[in-house]
Amino acid sequence: MNKWLFGFLVVLTTSLMGSSFTIGKIGLEYATPIMLVALRFLLAGVIMAIIVKCLRIPHPKKGLDWIRIALIGFFQTAGVMGCIFVSLRTITSGQSAILTFMNPLLVVIFGTLFMKMTYSWRQWIGVIAGFVGVFITLGAQVNFQLGTLLGFLSAISWAIGTLLIKKWGVHINTWVLTAYQMLCGGLILLIGSFLLENPSFQITTLSITILLWLALMASIVQFAVWFYLLQTGDAGKTSAFLFLAPFFGVLTGWLLLDEMIDWNVILGGVCIFIGIFMVNWTSKSRYRKKLKKPLFH
Image (cartoon, rainbow, N blue to C red; front, side):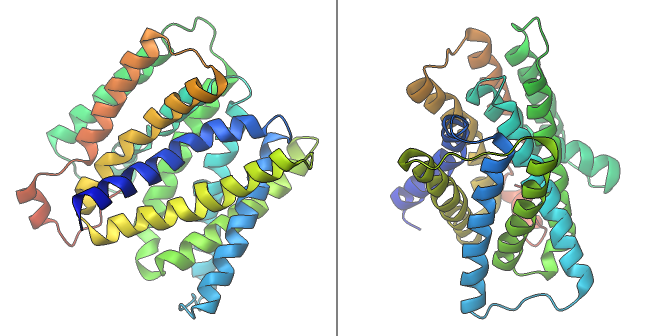
């Protein structure tokens, strides 16, 4: 792939990932958090389900595979996005993005503890650097806010979802899995909205625009571009660019919401970015040996 095209697509997908935190926070002025994210993924899931059906992409035939898709949707969509959007009530979009994108660091820990995976010394140094970055990021806050805990829980849920996809996703088409896990996650969030909040959504031109942006650009387009990059390039190197997403989360929060960027957020963010990069980066010789082994991202 042309390096300029690759660079453009990397910036496009990671900026969509990161800016969704800021756009989502703006959307909370017009909707309750769980309802907003439920509508986002229901709309994205329905559109993608129609696409994969029209393209006649093979669907799972076993009931167990559909249960697995639902469980992935619970962690990857409902757990991650539910925690993110509720966290935005009490912390900045930049802080939420930094906490959420700790997920590659947690994948290493959970993979070692529960799936007997092995990782290099470089990746463990990355884990340590990442957690140091989190403590630095939150160090200036004397009071531990609910949003901080929810941001961390979103990273935990994402890490669990990632490991479940690694374990179960090899037998399910990527696009089918993406479509239906979003749809299942959206349904779970919709039920959760009625159980955990007084759901509301104000219909205005801006609120509809935000919802369409989150569903189409920040979900469908972002997923499509990201999976394309992973499938056509070096998955190990490509995954390392995930560190750009929280950078865009902090940047757009500053540009659109006038969120303050304190020194500890910058320093902590740099440590987390370095940690994520070290966890995801694989040398050429090592990558060739493990070319057939799935990489987490």
